[in-house]
Length: 138
Image 1 (cartoon, rainbow, N blue to C red):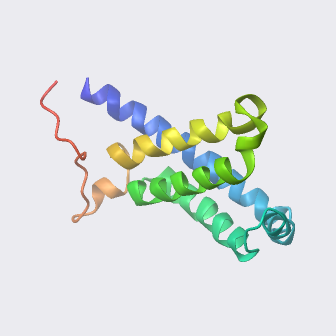
Image 2: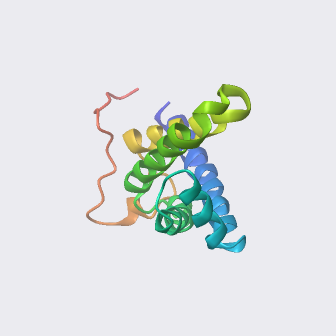
């Protein structure tokens, strides 16, 4: 059963990483100035667009590789929470924040449980690959 959980976590990690990588890439390809302008229009500082874009781009690659999974996932939770509260909540669930919520929940799962299968984290001598709550042998 533990192996199935690791396979599931690997799938979540890679899909979440690809999703955020592509979103970060689009921010820069479309012109980060446009994204900064949008951020300013909703009351956020324009430089926050750079920070979010870099976190999405670099964090997406890191997540795909399994490097800093819990830290990167925590940053993704913060980004999604901000997107939901600042932009998407007013649009309602369907057509609004449902995708952001799903991405946030995936990131929460990885923050709490990590994902060591095929990860660089598992190869590092100082990496912590245990979960927050120790499980018995299933």
